[in-house]
Image (cartoon, rainbow, N blue to C red):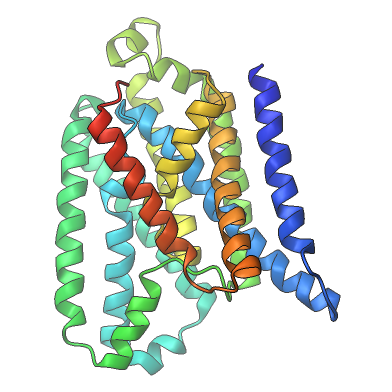
Length: 314
C-alpha cells in the first residue's frame, strides 16, 4: 500500500516534469529544451531538498509545525546578500564570480548552522528547545541588521537585494545546478541510510536510548544533513520558507507511515511536484513571471495557521 502510493507520487512528479518540458514546444527546440531543463532541474533540487530536510527536522524536533527555516537560514542568506551589496556596490556585486559566490554561500550557511548546533547541543540533544529559540532570535537579529543595512543603500542597490530575497528559478547557472544536484543526491542517499535510525528517534529520546541508539550522535548527524540540504537550495535560488511545510504535510497524508525510508523520498518528490506544477501554471498557462515563490509562501502560511489553530497532535 505504502509502496504503491510512493510509486504514484513518483509517477506524478515524472508526468509533471514531462509536461513542463514538452508543453507547446516550438523551434528552436534544442535551445528551448535546454532552458526548460535547467529550470526544471532547479525546481527539482529546491523542492526535493526542502521537502526531505523538513521531514528530518520535524522528526528531530518532534513537532510537525516547524521547518528548518526557523533556525535562521533564510535570514542569514538575506543578510549575506545585503552586506555584499553594501560593501561592493551594485556593480561590484554583479561582477562577482557566480560559482565562487555560490560555494561561499553554501559553506557559510552550513558552517554557521553546524556552529549553532554544536554550541547549543554540546550538553546533549535535550537542549533542542534552546536550539530552536536561539535560531529564532538569531533570525530576528539578522533580519534587523539586514533591514538597517538596506536603509543605507540607494534605490538601485536596494532593488538588487529585494530581488535576491525571493526565490527565482530563472537564470540558474548550469554549473551551480550540477553541483547542487550532486549534493542533493549524496544528501538524500545519506538520509535514506539514516532512515531506520530516524524511525527510532521519532519514539523519543528516552525510548530511543533504551533501545540502544546513539541518540545524540544520530540527531547531530541528521541536523548536518538538514543544514546541507537547506543551504544548497537557498544558495541556488533564494529562500522558500513554507514549501517544506506543504511538502511534509502532504507526505504524511499521502504516504501514511512512520517509516522514513518512504517519508523522505515522498516529501522530496511532493516538494518537487509542487514547484513544477506551480511554475507550469504560472509560466505556461497564465504567462506570469516571478510569482511562484510568493504564492507558495502564501499557501504555506495559511497551512501553518490552520495547523496551529487545529493544534494537530504529533
